[in-house]
Image 1: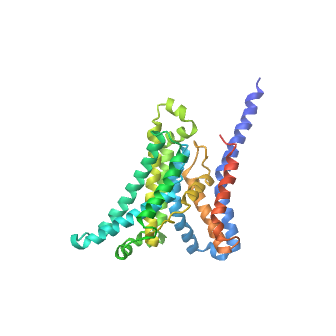
Image 2: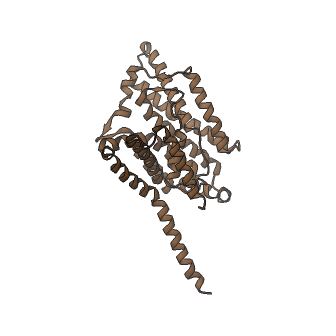
Image 3: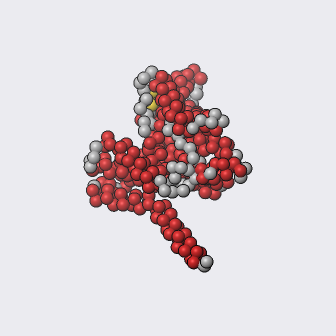
Length: 337
């Protein structure tokens, strides 16, 4: 009867080794891609290209950090791209309206920009809260709720822009521009914000009771209820966090072009979900890491950058590549948990 423990030890060791290899997979893949990119094009390894890749990654990366909490809890959000578009259009419309009335009321331009930024964060939180309430109190599947709001958000923006574009006032655009174009110690502001959001997300997920509750709900919601975890509240908060992350990403994105159109944020949901999944978060929930999501977001940006620099395939197939990556990782994950 004694061989059983000795047989169990190797199996546990093998499981730990397999888990470690799976955890390191995204990082190994990123390193391999960087080597391939350097071999294919010398411009890939330049500092300017690195800053460009990380800056472009920051928008999706920030949203993906929030998406990590939602997916770990067993949910999903297909509306983040449309949500970002509506938030961008709303804040531009609001700032332009305040600027138009500022002549008579002497409202400082800096205050107008500040109000627009606050409005973006509040809108993101409200949209996320609405998702959470519909899913928890309305007992509607996350897929259905966010699929519906995906169409609602983009339709409202199209109506608000009258089918065209909402463009930020020139004077406000000049004042707002540094939020995207400025650098601190040689590193663009969006990258710094991305790092802060990622660090905060990792701290919340790994070092707080809320983070443990999110993972417990994703692992087994019924058991979490038996453990006196406020499941509905935790789920609502995860969607609020995601909405605020969308708001932060939008605040950084608007000064890049200074406008919002019906195509703003198109397929951002695909990129955000792909970043989370590639980073090692289980699609079924219960397990995931913010650092993995960060690596996944950078990895996908590196793939797109290599395609742009080398023209191996058409740049119009970037979304197809991301779709293939999602399917492949989901196939690899099928035996987990």
